[in-house]
Length: 88
Image 1: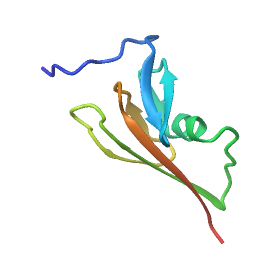
Image 2: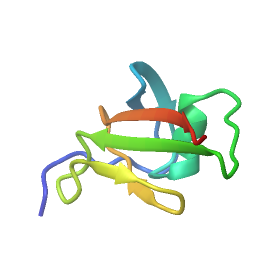
Image 3: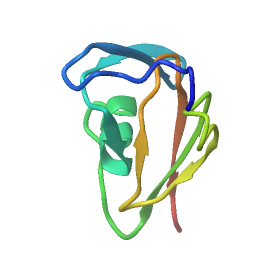
């Protein structure tokens, strides 16, 4: 059994997205959720790719990358980095 703090559904959890503090209430975030936290009006299309990486995640999944369709359990203090790339 892990001693790490788990967010309670509806509880405010502070995370960092692209260097900015964000408050979320979800226990899990999807790839799309994280992209929307990083960019105010993200554009999705076949020529736009968002790369999502994270660290300081839960003990069973402390770091990694996310692609469309992925979700990740949220932990207070978790850090996400999201970059946008235009395919040419």
